[in-house]
Image 1: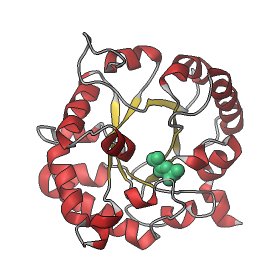
Image 2 (image 1 turned 135 degrees about the horizontal axis):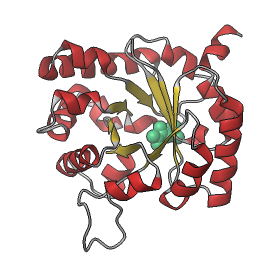
Image 3 (image 1 turned 180 degrees about the vertical axis):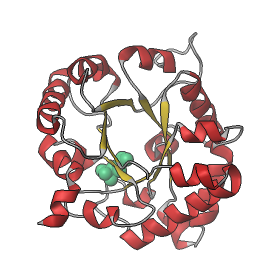
Length: 255
Ligand code: PEP
């Protein structure tokens, strides 16, 4: 059985003080209560301080990006080893904002995935189609290409150390969520593709998160889908109480 995961991507938001305040409240609210694995991805500047607050808790820390080299003359970049040292267990790779705003293609994403794994970080590998690609009925072709090129030379062991996130670009930050059925169709496609390439065992153990305007109001219906194992949350992860409601989606269902 795959453990469900709720990850919050804060993007370029929060001062160190705000990030520490959020992490303290999250830690206090979640305590030792069972629930999904919870991950937060603060900006680089707040990683170390948030790691200190979360030390000894079940909440995990992610970075939002890394550079593929171990070190060197790459002004403004951060390596996987540096992220590990700062206290990260995860790193988001291939987010659509990196792909579109910073021109990261599948080859760059592949290098970053390999660098993350080599540094002992677990990648949260993001893929998803644009609105135009969906309207042209090319969703599966695009997803397949992102998988094939992004995962080039990765082993089944590497897949076992990764999380995937299906994030339709048209649903990110737009308030327009994929319906549970639309998301499930792509999640199933991804799982079947992994089964074909890496074996059924790898596919059945892979957590595939959905991302794109997830809120406390829609998380429960998304999580009812068989192949949706969690969520990567942007906007609704910025307010700790709203993020906690997403994390506690099981309780929402019971109300
Ligand atoms: C994201 O950026 O990964 C995301 C899913 O954002 P939002 O929840 O705001 O759509």
